[in-house]
Image (cartoon, rainbow, N blue to C red; front, side, top):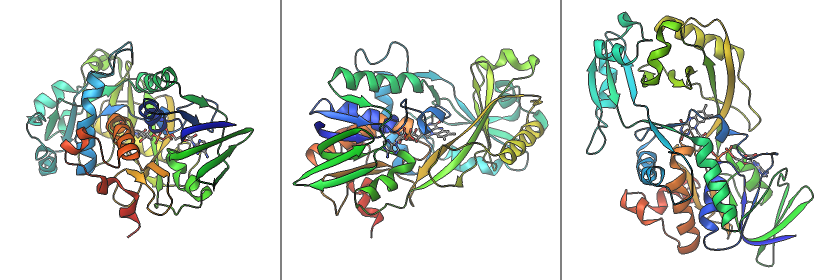
Length: 376
Ligand SMILES: Cc1cc2nc3c(=O)[nH]c(=O)nc-3n(C[C@H](O)[C@H](O)[C@H](O)COP(=O)(O)OP(=O)(O)OC[C@H]3O[C@@H](n4cnc5c(N)ncnc54)[C@H](O)[C@@H]3O)c2cc1C
C-alpha cells in the first residue's frame, strides 16, 4: 500500500507536470491506466505553441508558460523545447476580412502582421497562389518538443522522489477518516489529496469518488501525415504552419513531411479514439483543392481527444463540495502549451489557496479556473 501526500490520477502532460511541481513539496504517487504514459491526448497532439489560441483566459495561460519552455529548470531537458515555426492564417480572395480578428490579437511582444498573397506563397510554396487573397503572419508560433517536455516532467518528478505506476487504472476511490483510499488493479494507495488529471476520463474518475461532474466533453480530432511533392520538399524546413481562414483545417511541416488536420471536433465518449475514414477523405479533398499536395499515400493517421467544459477554459481547483479532491482537467486543445503555468497554479492552489504569481500577473484568478464556476 502506497501512502503519500498527493495522489495524481493520469500521467499525461497534466498529471506529469503537476506531479513534478508537487514533488518539490511533499510525497507524490502517479497512477496511470495505460502501460506507458502519454498514450492518449499527450502523445497525439499537433505540438504547436500558439500563444493566441483559445479563449482569452487560455491565451494568458499560454503566455505565462512561455518562459518555462525557453528557460526550463537546469537538467530538465537536453534539447530546446521550442523551435521557431511561425504560422500563416490564409484567406481566399474575397475572404480577406476573415483575417481581421486574427490581426486584432496583435500587441506588445505579440507580433501579427498582414502579408500580401505573393509573400504568403513565398513563405508556403505548397499553397495554390490563385486561392490566396492575403494572410496574417504570426512569427511567435513555435513547434514544441512534446516528448522532451513530457519526459522532462516525468524524469524530474522521479528525481524529486515521486513514483509512477503504470497499468494501474483507478477503479475505486473512497474517503475514510480524512484520507482518500484508491484501488487500481493490484495496486492500492492512500493520500491526503487526490489530483484528478485523467484527461477525457476526468468526469468518470470524479464519479468514482462520489464527486459531481464538471460536464467535460471529449472531442475527436483527426490528423494525418503525408509526403510533400518533391518540388516543395526543400521548402518545408522554413515553411510556417498554415491555417485556412473560414475552414477549420490546418497543415504544418513535420520532420520533412506534412501533418494535416481537418480541425474536426466531434463529441465522443472517452475512449482510445481512432480516426474516421470520412474525416480523412474530406481532409484529402480539401488539401488537394487548396494546396499542391497530391495525396497518393497516407503515411500515418491518428485521432486524439480534446476535452472541454462549457467555457473551454481549464478546470483547476478543489471541488467545492468534496474536500481534498482537486481537479486538473478540461485542457482542450491547449494542454501541452498550458502545462507549465497550469501545473504551477495547481500547486499554489493546493498548498496556499491562490494561483501562482506568474498567472496572477497575467490576469488569471482562481475563480476563472475553479470547478465552482461550472456548478452555478
Ligand atoms: C489532434 C490534437 C492536436 C492537438 N494539438 C495541440 C497543440 O498543438 N498544442 C497544445 O498545447 N495542445 C494540443 N492538443 C491538446 C493536448 O494534446 C491535450 O490538451 C493534452 O495532451 C491533455 O493532457 P492530459 O494529461 O490532460 O490528458 P491525457 O494525455 O489524455 O492524459 C490523461 C491520462 O489519464 C489516464 N487515465 C484516465 N483514466 C484513468 C484512470 N481511471 N486511472 C488511471 N489513469 C487514468 C489516461 O490513460 C491518460 O494517460 C491537441 C490534441 C489533439 C488530440
